[in-house]
Image 1 (cartoon, rainbow, N blue to C red):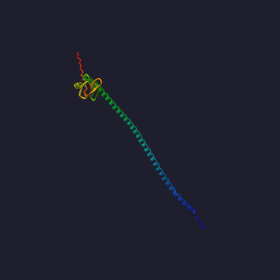
Image 2: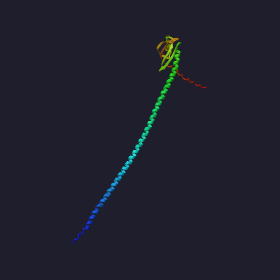
Image 3: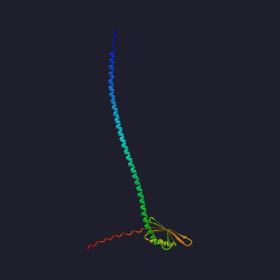
Image 4: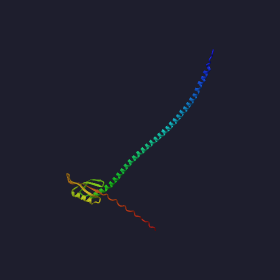
Length: 206
């Protein structure tokens, strides 16, 4: 009988077959480690980028918050300045009004004094209006001649000019008759007294 031994060749084939996957496994492990390192590096880079972006966003948020606070402060300052301007304008109007009233008060005293001086007998004043140096008079008199005398007296006064008769009409009551008149004139404020220079006294040395 002829015997054929088939075991040894099978072992050789098994050895040859088993030798190839070991090298491939090593290569695969090596490639896998490289890929893992690459992925780890990418994760580190992404983490650093995320941290950088987060810090930048936080910084921008802080700047935006500071800008909003500054804007709010400026708005408050602007509102206060606007309020102060309005108060200043109000005070200036009040001061101007007080000064105007003061001037009118002094003018009213002078006007009443000059009108009284020029007023003839049997002529009366019922209403006096003063505005912008213009005086409007209303009153009563016993005749037109007395009204004419009053106008002549006002024209002769250095404190009145452009005296004009506006109207003159006769009125009657149960007991008497009279003339009712209205006239206007420009009032000239008297000049303030000139200030006299102070006399300087020299000391005489003995």
